[in-house]
Image (cartoon, rainbow, N blue to C red):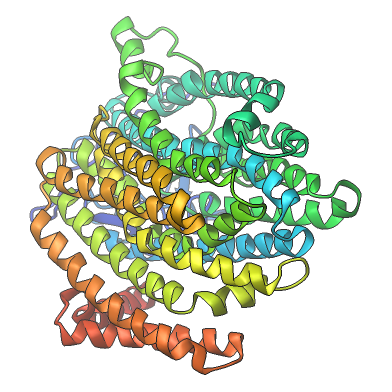
Length: 637
């Protein structure tokens, strides 16, 4: 029987209520992720039902027994996410003044706080499993020819991860899904549920992009498998015996397909503000690598690690598939029976070179720093590539954790930009930069001050010797000088790509940074070996960060560049004081584990003390912010 119930627009916002600042309904159940659903622009208006308010979260798939994706809030059965906005006036609350009543919406800040906390927990878990993965590689294969061969093959998934998960895919698809969600909200008024589902811009976006993307990535993966000898020759021309690296590359090339699909799922779910499955992908990825290595290393040697990378990529897709089907769903490639103007509007032009090229070039230039590093290190003695890799992996942990807030708030910035709320986007970006800089500088101080103790605790066992510990720790201290730059590049690039049409400026800034890296690395490697390579990396990424910071305010979001730069400068002074304290205090305790554990208390304490002494606003205001966040969690419960 055809469903003819119309989608109705609710009343406009009550006076005094600001659009766009409301979050999930208190006590609302997470949309497939354990989190409260957001009041995103894609949520349709409530539809009167028999004794219960019916609302649908942005892009949510229908639950069992429900029609056209409408979840029932209240009454018997599963409680759906209470998150709706008016089609014409985003921010319309669910509850007062609407049919059926309902709980008042919670502030957006509470949703972001909970989302950031869950994302932080899973990101930390992924980082811990990543360390365990690196420990297993170091224990089983040490730092020699075999580990170098695997790390060269690992360059393919590292590049694929940047392009298809962390940067290009997210920067393209999160804004694309945000625009589709906004069009869905505007177009559903007056349509039946069946017509709204058939012409759903979100499902049209999926139908138009996902099949083509899958086919394209499958072809690229097959070409990489066939061209593995050439790939290894380009990545590491000075490698004495490339055969093992070629075999490993053929297995890791399969991640081009799995990472692409996983990145697509992650972008779609984040745009729908479902953060748990995307945050869990690296846990599943590292579990796949570790399990395969432990099971097969005695038979396949280091090839087991490459096979584990392929298995981990598949797990990244599977861990998100149920949430994607439930929240987003699949759809037709075009709207049947719709006028051509609508089909052209809803059919995404992501394959257009002018739209996709700025993001692709930015991501390639950013990840090419790893290619430069391994290209220059291939001619150094065996183990150089491994020392650089272990140092980089550990040093970048503070950067990865500091960017979690930007990952959570990127959809908020994208939706604010799409709705023309420039001031809201500016405040959000400035807050993100302050919080991310504070977190990464505390981590940098700890990494530099306690580098030997950290590496010794993490890796010095099995085939990884004390000599390897000293070499890796020294390189890690140099790498850590660029952590602030890496963090700022990750945080600043997102606002640039939040607009409807990406700009070339981030790619040009990253290109300038890459040029600095190449020139400085080619010169420095002759004199300082791995230390010169690490220093060139820090110089290149810092150059790109400075360009992005100065360019953002005049081009995209009118942030106060001078104030942000002074804020980061004050935090850097506090980090230098904390780092010096750790460097002096670390060797005083012979036991490396105890020394590093005490350092985790000493460095943040000195960072806070130095920040208070120089009156760094980000530190002096931190206790009040922590108390406010604690109160939000109490209210959420």
